[in-house]
Image 1 (cartoon, rainbow, N blue to C red):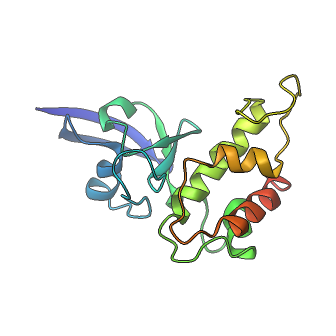
Image 2 (image 1 turned 60 degrees about the horizontal axis):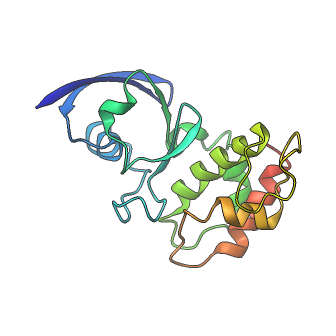
Length: 170
């Protein structure tokens, strides 16, 4: 069975007819040619497919495309470009927050969403002060919030350094 899906991806609106079982990840990669978002585990465990849906980070392999109708999706391709990098992208380059690069798009999109969570005051399991107006981007907080994004190369110290740097700029 096919369904009509209308969504905005990186600022451009798309009206598509897709199989009702199509995930957002497959829509992005196979129907729109946006291959920056990676298919890692396809089970929501690695974070390589993380995108922003209405500003909230989501594992695109676990979300059906139909559930994203009338929503705004931002992928790694929509965050910045070579002339104007997003602050998180620039921080990842500055701190060498990647090795093979496979997880990097998901790490960066997750970071952007995570920093927005901090600004909104959403707590995590390690948040020390639940009454704070804005959560602090401390190392423990960053590590906890990013625990759903796996780096097979174990570039975590550099990823955390990049995130802490970007937190001061975002």
